[in-house]
Amino acid sequence: MDKKLKRGTNFIHQIVSVDVDKNLNDGKVQTRFPPEPNGYLHIGHAKALSLSFDIASEFEGSCFLRFDDTNPEKEEEKYIDAIKEDVLWLGYSWDKLTYTSDYFSRLYDFAKQLILDNKAYVDSLSADKIKEYRGTLTLPGKDSPYKNRSIEENANLFEGMANGIFEEGEHVLRAKIDMSSANINLRDPILYRIKKISHQRTNQDWCIYPMYDFAHTFSDLIEGISHSLCSLEFEDHKPLYEWFLDQIPIKNRPKQIEFSRLNLMYTVMSKRKLKTLVDSGQVNGWDDPRMPTISGMRRRGYTPNSIRDFIYRIGVTKKDNTIQLSSLENCVREDLDAKSERRFAILRPLKITLENYSEDKEEVLLAPNHPSDESLGTREIIFSREIYIEEDDFMENPHSKFFRLSINSEVRLKYGYIIKCNKVIKNEKGKIIELVCSYDPDTKSGSSGSKRKVKGTIHWISSKHAIKAEVDLYDRLFKEPFPEVNNSNLSQCINPDSLEVINNAFLEPSLASAKPDQTFQFERLGFFKIDINNNKEKLVFLRILSLRDTWSKIEKQSL
Image (cartoon, rainbow, N blue to C red; front, side, top):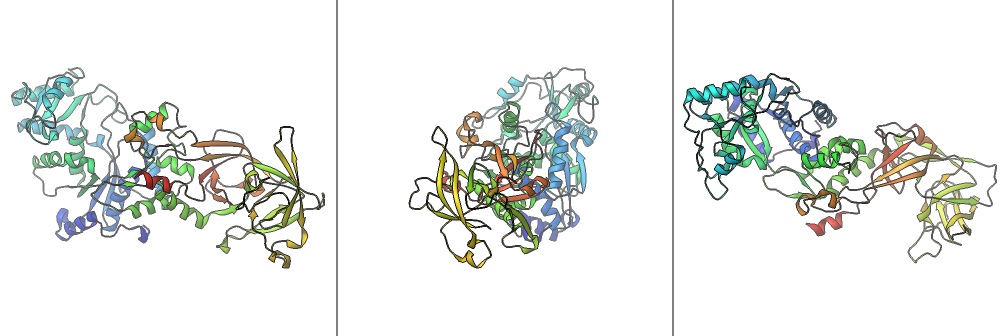
């Protein structure tokens, strides 16, 4: 791991360091990242997984990737494959790949032992009654009328549940704790429920499945996890985690440590809500470049290093806070700026004819691939009589601070010549369709005449040699800074300008051979890459990010 990305002495590091010094768990550090395979990983998961993997690495321990596959109704193999790909792409490798389903038999045995110890019972109340009996945050619950069943009856009923004798909802297995507890998670939580659904790994072997808290705790125990790192929403579940561990005589006891989750503005961190966006067609799949999923960010052109750098910069605390999305975007910009070769691209072309440049003349000009990294070399660009510039780089009636091209004004073509606009050609609707200009042959970049100064410099492309492409301009998916909080209907928060498709952009010829993993800075426009997942036959580039942050001021006002 890159040393600069090590987390240093955050509070979790300090806790683990003390535990190692005390020789807890025999001085070994073993963590795990346990996603449920019911969706794709998002940027919030990146914080959780990097913390677990980095802590293990820093203390020369191990980290398991464990799939919490206890809910076959919502889980699919495609999500498992996607999660593994995302973890590896971020630069991490697991010491062991496990599944909670690996332990179904042992979890079943743990549950039977709780019954034999009179610590669990089979409840036959309906789901609605169980909820009613549970009470509220201000009112205590009350015991189920089935709580006092004999150990033998509970054991027989639980065995019948496992053998498929009963229907879904007919019985559940509950822990026998305290229905008057101030912590609602301790009010006889459900341990097992009947689900007659085929499992993606165990097929029809089981028709009962363990609940998260039970399965999570005992899977940690089985795997010898020393430190169970999880986000703050599980803090109220910690007493239940501890209660489960108290029921088993163990030498090395896992320790649950909570940290603040990643709350990012203009972003949704719920897999359920993200899945709704996918299923409703409001985005083009889990890897849509506007999605906060790791696969979406990978497709868009975000780099693993920039994401890990962002996680490192925001730090690890116990206090919930909200991070500006621009902080992540700036990490991406920094990384891309250092390594992306420069190219010319014209998204909204305006034709220029240089009336004093020979029709049959062409020149090969040299341009650096990077302004500060000479090792990336140079490229050839062709200059000719007819070129394209961006529409925005010309103004017929310019204001005082407009320093690009206008009638009777001059501007430098980057790596080329100084040109002057002499005439404007319009169509029948009054739209400018062409400029007639002249060039100064003594002002070629690199020549002695290049020292003549003008106020503006713009990019350009030879119309004869340009290649056509589609360019997709992606922006933020949501227009609201807090879409999960301010609106229950996410569709109302969608930014209508989150995607602009430009069908007839013109690019430098060299971009025809761009590789899928290459990123480029289209000069003055932003960072771009080929969209490798597009289903179109033509060349498609997408915008990773613009060159400048246009959102940070808006974000600061929203905080």
